[in-house]
Length: 216
Image (tube, rainbow, N blue to C red; front, side):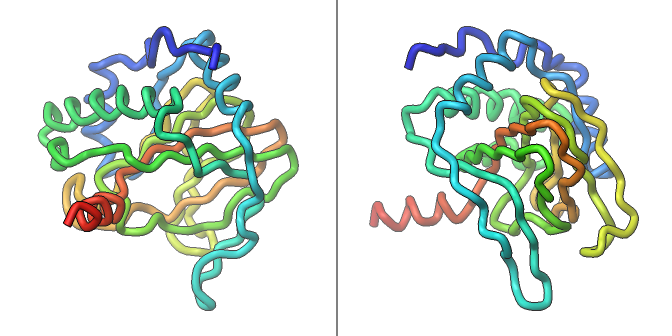
């Protein structure tokens, strides 16, 4: 791969990050500046080289269906440069969580990486909550495009709150284990008129358990 990550997250200010993580338990989701233009364009080139598939149109149970209309790449090779980004951000966030007096800094591992592509005019994804297996904090790089990333009070979208973010920002969302065993917020994406590319990083505790079982 010729495209290299020669620098990472140069706009992610340490003081701003500690302030953001300190507010995150109460606000549930927020965004901070992260990538400069060179970094953003480099990551766009990297994600555009991946192979995507359509998301399953419907997920969840019969009483809590989640409707999806976007493309994704979940099978990121272990030697892909995007994992370099994941490891870098993991260290930055873990260190800052500790400084902010929150929990999970000694456990956080961004071992789940998903790249999502929302074409113009797609419906995005309806209100849903991340599985409880994803813990501590969720981090999403917004690379391009528009659309609304919103938290809400119920699965009908009541009480929707748009989290302001522009390309180059890092969206953060709380998850169980950051302060207490409280689930992360219901959230959704809609209103996409320009191609929205994102990179999502999560700490999947089931992946850790499965890896340990394979060793026994």
